[in-house]
Length: 225
Picture 1 (tube, rainbow, N blue to C red):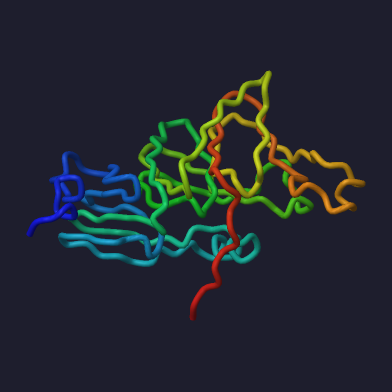
Picture 2: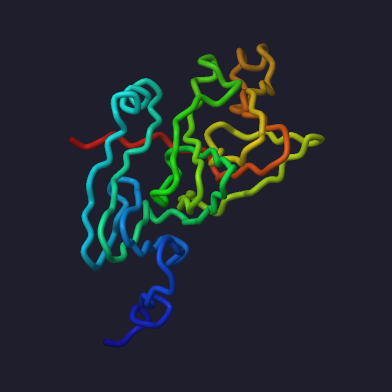
């Protein structure tokens, strides 16, 4: 078979190492030898002896998801083989989490991760209920975390002398040791007159990095039953 579609640019090459790797800008590959975890419905192809099982979050996790709208719909992938993961042709990236580190990320941006990583759903400090209740997943342990982002993300350094203000609908995640709070950049009078559409931002202060998508999040599509 000939044609640009079958050029070396698109044909999958043999895996060079076990675990997670970037297949291309829109897809991650995972060579499984045991277990890994992925977003439900994100597998686009696989080969080998693999089983895909819905991963329960327990009663506490289900309650958090019901109350906050956050939570990660996950599946465990077990066996030996390789699988490819993607989500709505979004750009894919890999984050290395080291022991003692934390990475806070919005659940909508999680694609897959090593089973050696653990996560918990937390309220963003300083957001409160008045801010709409901002909830994210905090990953700890040691391993790789695969993320998706609608567009090419911005990675902004944060320093104690120069905090960063981020739209709450655009933030993807941030590193540990950053303090968060809500910042109101619009007066009450301006809000009553219709406002600028940029009333409240998440302020991050400290030493680290914040990852931002280049557009605000669009409303979630209703689930089909």
